[in-house]
Length: 195
Image (cartoon, rainbow, N blue to C red; front, side, top):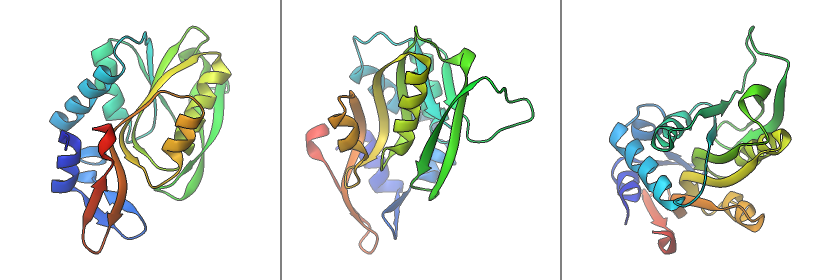
């Protein structure tokens, strides 16, 4: 069992509807030590790759992406979900369905922040159906850049996102892959071959 699986067992709460609540350390309150360990593990798993940009989606992936960007000493870009008064019209846009929020979002990145010279590592906290990752891939491709890999903290292996991305040929690394979880018993089974 790796450090993130142990943390999920200790501090995670399984909710009805295949939901895992880890907001006390990953995506509401941030446990810096866990984020640091995730970042180092992702850098280890993508060793040998040339990466010049980290891309995530707001908001929960930003903490992990920032720490990974720090280790690579490269810029971190996050796709925004909402327009502001100073949002530019010059942007790449894609649609992303959020499993957690049960809604579609138009996400965007301003054109100056992605280019055809970028070798991008996509980073996020969760992978479920894969729609957020597919939207980020779409943004990179619109810019003419290359997706070098996808680094995920927690993958819900019982949902199709991981299989979809792997079948498309993407180098996907998930630190904890959940094969099943039960809200009544609060039990989780992790996929052992990825430890």
